[in-house]
Amino acid sequence: MSEFAELAAKAEKLDATDELAGKRAEFVLDEIVYLDGNSLGALPANVPGRVEDVVLRQWGRMRIRSWDESGWWTAPERIGDRIAPLVGAAPGQIVVGDSTSVNVFKALVAAVRIAESTGSAGSAGSTGSAGTGRDEILVDATTFPTDGYIAESAARMTGRTLRPVTPAEVPAALSGRTAAVLLNHVDYRTGRLHDLPSLTAAVHAAGAVAVWDLCHSAGALPVGLDEHGVDLAVGCTYKYLNGGPGSPAYLYVRRDLQDRFDSPLPGWNSHTEPFGMRPDFEPASGALRGRVGTPDILSMLALEAAMEVWDGVSIEAVRAKSLALTDFFLECVAAYVPKDRVESVTPAPHAERGSQVALRSADAGDVMKRLIERGVVGDFRHPDVLRFGFTPLYVGFADVERAARVLAEVLLR
Image (cartoon, rainbow, N blue to C red; front, top):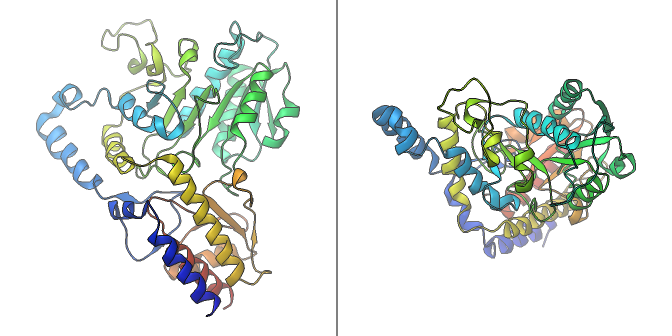
């Protein structure tokens, strides 16, 4: 039996025992192997009907009554509570709305303000020292560019110095000067999973506030926000959560920090009396402080419908399949692709791997174009990275074997 036949047979066996295999039917998919869910998740099949109802009935016939009668007003917190179990948070700590960039800005400025208030965030219930000496913000030097741009603006706004460091350098870079640290849970280029528990603990030991970007981990692996005492976190919903293009992001504020969360973007939706129209701002209690203006209801309720695909699914099962998929892809690539044509830049150890595999290839841009022409959709990151995202709810092992086989055929042309 050839290597192709052996690995194809192995894929068939793995698919036959996949406890999440039935979830694929809940998405709108075709014969294409879709490995770009780490950029835009596939469409859940129930979303079009739900959006039609929102537009034609709730908006079209009920009109303004839907703010109360259809639950529009409470959607940001309600959907936040749907996301919460996937990131290891108890209810009442996540609010949905705005973009990831806006939420990064809110979180980072609020983190600095928490650090300069009496006591620091630290672990739940702790009271470390903060004060005016905390004049520095650390930011992940390998972060998605927008996070860096936002961090630089937040530093200027708060009179802090911005210091880019790699996640590995964070423990040594922390000091009594550190006010806040902005880190990515998973590196968007390489798929490297950073050690959230130990890095958060190090930030707290230094008396600073930890802010995490979960865009490439939420819905792909356990996060444990409450368990590890994360202070603030943000994330998008259009990748592994399948909320749709530009779907609203979310903001997590740890419960014991909520009365100290001082948003730089206060709005009528975050006012304790939103319809009082008072000229003075008094923040609402709880995670509602993270709201700003009128929620984007159409995309918000499309996201709520999309979250139903998670019914009955444990994030632990998703993580187990994610690792099995990425392991199998690397096995197939090693068997099919000449060793001098690609190099994996994604860590091999499970503890350091997200839910994607990044392969370095000198002609990556052209290779990805040809893969897409052959029905295998991943994406390209400048200058030389082929990026393949594995969404366990709808990607199967036969998809993985086919992707590696087509990659080999493209590279051998």
